[in-house]
Image (cartoon, rainbow, N blue to C red):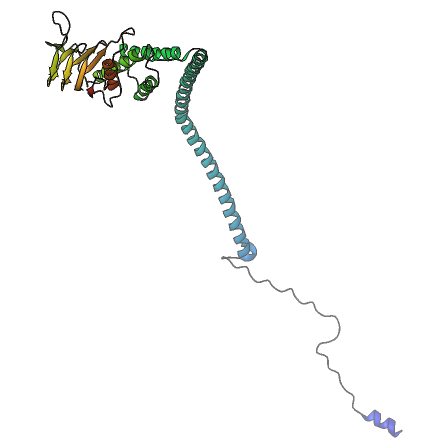
Length: 312
């Protein structure tokens, strides 16, 4: 009983609640912040990354359009320049092609001419192989003589190398060939004639004149005369049957027909030689020495003949 009484005497604890129990009153919605009246709004205008991306895209599109336009303009300009170049070059190229075709045509013609000459030479060689050596030499010398005479008649200049070849051919031919001495005389005549064409030697019709004891024509007769120690100029001189020693002939026409003549220490300066040696003329040592001296002279404008008398 005492225990029950003790428990019943204790004061009760009061539990206090902050609010009365029951249904709660709902909280009102939060009031949104008022929108700003002006300025930048990221939610409305976009943030920096979006603007940067838009700017980069716009720049990329602009550059693409610019480069495309530039490429088209460059292509158009190149095509225009190419057109101008073609317009300028076409006439020049056509002119070059025309000149080239003409040169090729001339070259073909020269090749054909050379081929004909080679075939002609081969034919002559075959014919010469079956002929005696003396007859072959006569034919060769006669051919050289004819070519030189034609050149003189037509006033043509034979190249020095070609004329030297003619001389070598004569030197290697036998002196017994019928055309040997006449061919030498033809070469000498042509050499002095070429000097005359070049204004080096005198023109016989304008400068030289008949001279006493030297010219054998008309009423003047020159036979078996002896002239020594003289300087003779601008005369028509006939060497046949004459004797000259220590004489210089200058600006004169020298005529010779292959007869006997004696020359000792004779100089011919700027002289025109007119040598007419018949094939049937008898050989003489004086003639041979004179012709060989004139043929072998280094310069026909100034020729020295030591002697036409044979040492024997």
